[in-house]
Length: 126
Image (tube, rainbow, N blue to C red; front, side):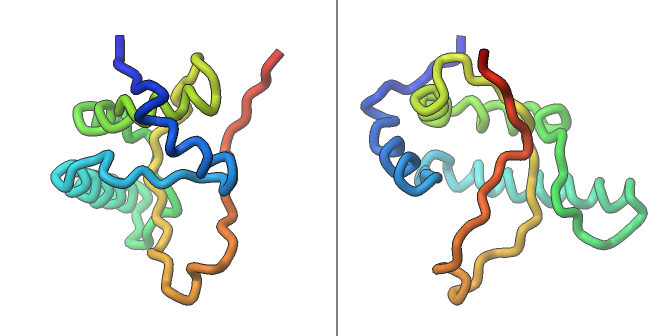
């Protein structure tokens, strides 16, 4: 069974998510994990470009869990992130996909603009 953090560790994130529509989890991943994510991104983009026969960057690259399970699975099953997901969605959280988006960094003049958050998938609840 994968461990899930309790309310003490996830509690501070829930109000921010409820109020703003997102939560920022600073310090959840170590610097070496972040470096690994950057390397995965570079590999995934290079593979996509090779398969597509182009040098243009993709909007997104999917299938990361299947392609890089040793690196991605521990990141997706972090106890704080799973605890937070259960706190806002209930105890039956399921992974839809692991995708790398190729959005450029936000410039200082864009910081006050609204973020167009969206869901790519949807589910139904009886």
